[in-house]
Image 1 (cartoon, rainbow over the protein chains, first blue to last red):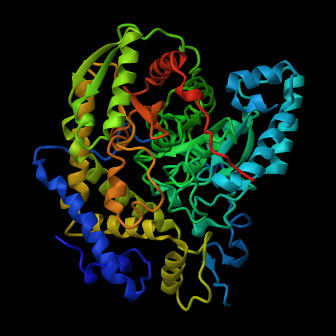
Image 2 (image 1 turned 60 degrees about the horizontal axis):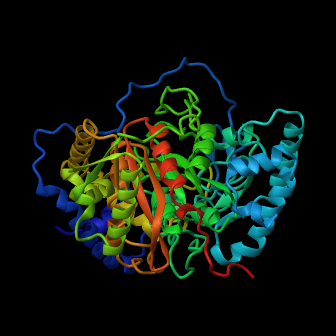
Image 3 (image 1 turned 120 degrees about the vertical axis):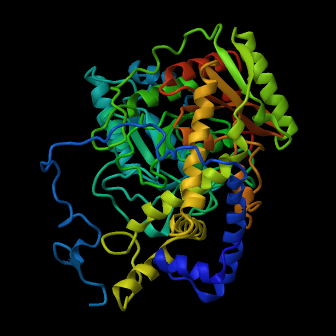
Length: 94
Length: 489
């Protein structure tokens, strides 16, 4: 198994990280090595095992649906001064 | 005043309460040391001189009024992963170089409420992804025992700060060994508590089902003090355990007589450095002399824990890192020409190589067609790892082994070989996969470098774990050793 240059480009697109085309071969090589290492997991049969998502199996914590904290978007976010409306931001070039 | 630097926190507290010195004087002593020594160790990303002196003056006032708590007036170093209002929180990344959080992490708030004095924010691997501190945007923290060697990571700056006596206490976070491994490499004590024991609110997330904050200090007694301050239920962290505050110092002197210690045979394979093997054997004999019983046990999934951990940690990382998009906070690229361009270039410029590798690897493990073979497979093995522990803890109270397979390695040894770097976490990651509490203590020296012993306990048995560690340290002096290297100007 290996991670091809095409795979790297696809993962970079999904993860929204631009990658310089000259760096793609080295990513492909390193990620393939990591993938091969991860493939050691395939050495055992786990067909009957239930997946474990979380170490401590507790029920969800819920709270009443009431406002408990101030809305920090308006004045405390780093780029709050670029905010035009609740969820609209303008880029610095504007 | 210099002797003060070598004191335990209890002795410092005694000095403050008996008015031998004030918190302002104590804080000034540490700040002066940071000024002269930190140029060698690079332990701190940000030093908060003014704020620390203000907090110290406030602590002195509390002490005068007879309102001092267990750590009032005691300085500490805070890992730069815990959000601090008014002080930047970088998480070791260019992405957050100018980030000032709008709120304090619960751990920070608890330290503040206890009247503690924050000296500064410590160096760390970028977003806690690394085992050597070499992925930090601010350069690596250097091991005070040998500056050419790594501090370990990711809480490397906290470990070097405590080891170089730049702070008596530090906070750390541990996703796969990030408290224990640098503690072992730098010759200090560090505890990863049970998952859910310490609130994750405001602790910048890496692998949310693995991350756990905890204390780092010279000795176990000091760990117990800091843990008593930072542990406890927090309604703002939905995975926080419901247990209330606890005094972890209360049972420190409890006897370890007849406690059963399991020795996992898989931890003493050929991959373990022979000198470390001997040192841990000696430490186990020592604990046997204290009245504990030794039993050979097996953790059969050990050979698969590192690949399993790296699949899960990378998957959770790729999801957690998606919040850094250059929109509301963090690094933003110049002149974006579209929203896609803004995301892609801000992330490309803001993240370092290791973080990008893990995001890409995690994206791969979670993507359609590979999910079953990697992410789900790893979750199944995680179940087996947890089952190994459940089964072994039916027969033993603690498990003991080495914290790391080697002493602190030289800088740049593994920078071009991520898989070899990952393998150095072989003994530490399973406690995170299973969510168990685990302690690293200094147990000897090899080639002049500290060696750590790891003691893992059952869920929420931190008190017992600390009492075993304390019994060991009461009978040994490895934790009192201080580097003979010349540090600073």
